Image (cartoon, rainbow, N blue to C red; front, top):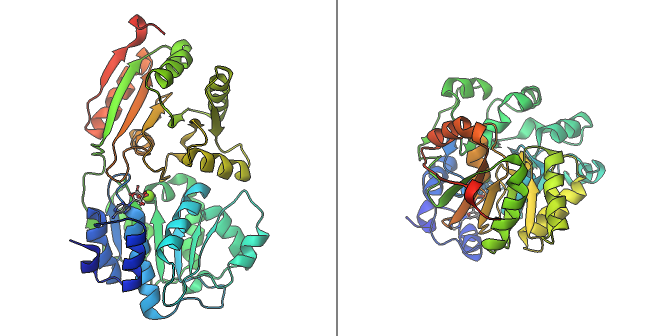
Length: 379
Ligand code: ADP
Ligand code: MG
């Protein structure tokens, strides 16, 4: 199957080529035709498998064909909801790079909290595709900067996260603002909620088109583990970075304080590091992530804030400095590496009393992992 067989507009095919995509990924092959038909669907596929383009392409195709693009109103035709600000920016970038030089320009815009709302209020004018985090979207609605009554397509990226408790109230609020007649598309690597429950959230009876792929089978990601006491985690981290010559490594810590501490300690030991988490200003977050992506920063220590959806080209290493609470978080964290068919290594630090928890995670992932004991290691 080639992109040209998916009956996409030819201008889109040119942009696909410019991005260097040769063939559609399996999720793209399956989702794009159904999405063009206007069906409601669930796209479930492993991390890094190209889910973003699988909704961006049919949406752009629809906007070109319907000739509704570039309307001078505050009524976006497409709404994409994402759980984090960083993901909003990233998804908007994918829309923008696939919407270059279209016969009718399509304007996409990311809106998210933590930055001043005024520029966003102005920019919404003429926006066709709005990519938003739920909280800021509601603020914009409240100040009449956006009218959601003309939305034709709703996308939930990282849908299980958007549909979980933390966003429940905001989601209910947003759904009442949308027209009942619309296309709904949900995407995630870990969407295991019951279909009935999802149908309820989507309000009207969706024709559900489910793509089944082994979502947890992130087989290009090599897993390695180390039994290590809390006290020796810092030295082990420095040892591994040096020994393996890691030049770009994403480290996950369990809290904001821990992330800061781990990064500080690395810097003290001559390894360039910074941290990213919800306590930092949005400007700082954007700046740090950008530096890390462009390899100007060697080690990024993060909370689960960036475990969802963030795409870092050919990131070779992820390290779990601490085990995440849920198997889902583990899947998403390690899924920052091994993207788009590249290989990656995910290393996990485990204390002895976490052995059972780790077993639960690995069982859920249907993966085995060798765990080395650091008691005998010299570092
Ligand atoms: P997911 O949302 O499934 O985790 P993304 O949509 O973020 O994955 O895509 C992961 C990476 O794969 C991105 O860098 C993207 O540019 C790239 N990609 C997407 N589709 C293709 C394709 N058909 N061929 C090659 N690379 C692709
Ligand atoms: Mg994604």
